[in-house]
Image (cartoon, rainbow, N blue to C red):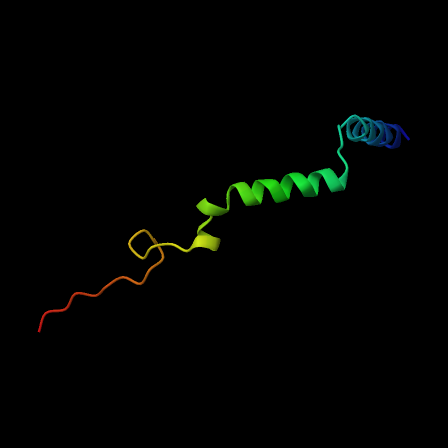
Length: 66
């Protein structure tokens, strides 16, 4: 019984914490996200590409002597 009361107190504490979190409307969050993406599009390598000299994932060149 005491374990059940302790578990319920933890649930109530968690619910109070979640209820106190400041929330914004989804439409506002979507607008803010869109503005952020547009402002940072020039620095995004997924949109602008990456030069081969700066790409750490490029295939390594093999040097061989004959």
